Length: 319
Image (cartoon, rainbow, N blue to C red):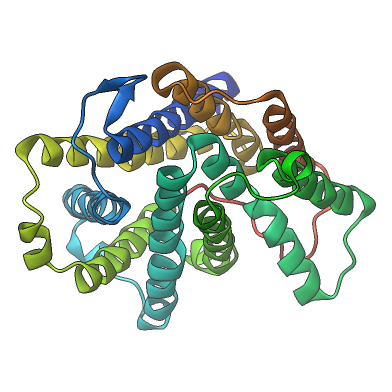
């Protein structure tokens, strides 16, 4: 039976999803540093590789079982022509974006990693504009300029005249943004033919297979991870992927995709706020100004009603 969309419920679903992504960013930083509260050691450190691998693999296995029970195994297949694109999405999109994002969190901080990754819409805009040979509007060019200025403020480039943060961490965050942008550009046509759960299943499956080649089972066994660490990894997969993806999908039943994307911009706010409260990662005024500029640029690019470049995809969160 058809039910009328309820925007308030949609915003609550999206808000809950972004809150969980914020919690996941803080959990990831805690896993890398071994600290959950400032000055208090609570965890045995976990590296970004196993965190990315188990997040993707556990999500794939859970999705496979859930979708198979609800829809049947036969409904999970996709045409062979789409498999190659889905594999690329899984490796160069999801796996790369996740891994570089967690490396950035490990080597810098939550604020730097999340904000630099959130510049993905800017790179999508520039790519689509160049491909279509369509000149961006003044609003779009201003948004890109705002984002670049915000990045410079965030990494203290104007204050120090040089990187004060870990260079590899900043590069990893930007690579995460590029991978995020690649995912959204490449997934556009596939999502037009298949529902998001089928796409997510095959993308996570491709990423899981890729991680098995990079970090095979015997290397994982040699890591001697404790029962507590495995429990953390399972909980992390639920908090960072399964639960927020389900909530975001529920929100899309009540909101237009553009409005859902705007609402999801609360993720950096939650991530940075939780990191400050639980990890003591405070943001300086200059960095806060940079964060505001980047978020403002994203809103300018994604705001409902603004003129889009032909072929420009809607940004889908994968974090």
